[in-house]
View 1 (cartoon, one colour):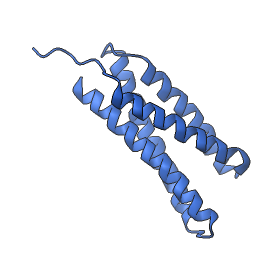
View 2: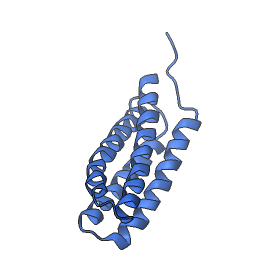
View 3: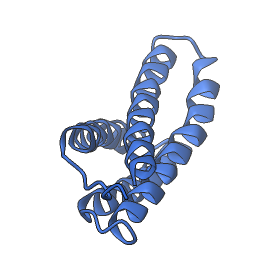
View 4: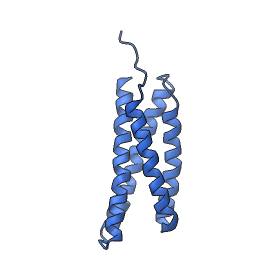
Length: 126
């Protein structure tokens, strides 16, 4: 159980770092460093991968682990929002891409804080 909890916590923190890096890379691109758009696109592959790990750990914590279901629900909502975000970015729909990115950062930060601060169940030692 501890492995699942730590996987959830570390993947949530890694995902949050990836979302923050997306904003940094987008800002660098917007200031004229056009090479950062490629970095932004590459990071858009890594960041959802970390979110997928987070989701998997959250589901394992919930179902076999008998833990709370909110991390799985929150991770599912983040996956849905991030999927839309990737589509908006690919379509260059910047007017919606930037606000959704801000929302994703805030939501990812909340989930990360919650999984680190909330006491999660630990299986009793034998």
